Length: 144
Image 1 (tube, one colour):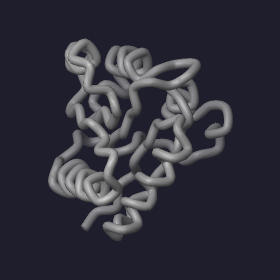
Image 2: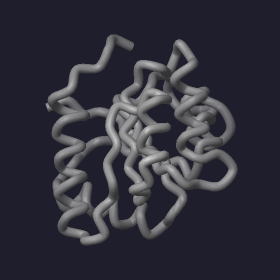
Image 3: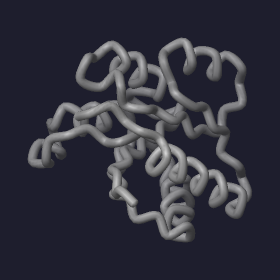
C-alpha cells in the first residue's frame, strides 16, 4: 500500500480532532498536513511561510472545508485549479454545507468530490475510511 500525503484544510478544531480520530480509528497511516484556511493551504503548496522548509512535491489529494476565515474553500479551489502546478491535485470538499449553490459552485470550480460531513462520529469514521480507500489507495494520480 502506498503512503500518500493528504493536505487537510479545516479551521474548526473540533472537526480537525474528529477527522484525525477517524483516521486513527481506521488505522490510516497517511501523512496529514493541516492548514487552518485557504491562505495556509496556499503557503503549503507554494512552499512559503511556515512551510518554507518542507520537501517539494504536491499532496496526493486535498480534503477541503468550505467555510473558513481569510480565504474560504471556494476561493482556494478557484486559485489552485487555475495554476498549472496544482490543478491536477484531486480535491475533496468535506463540508457541513448542504447548500445547493455551494455544491454547484464547487463543481464549477473543479472539485473532484463533494462530501457532506456526518454529525455522528461513527458515520464520519466510515466516510473518512471510504475517502482514504478511494483517493489514497485506489485512485491513480498523475505523475509529479
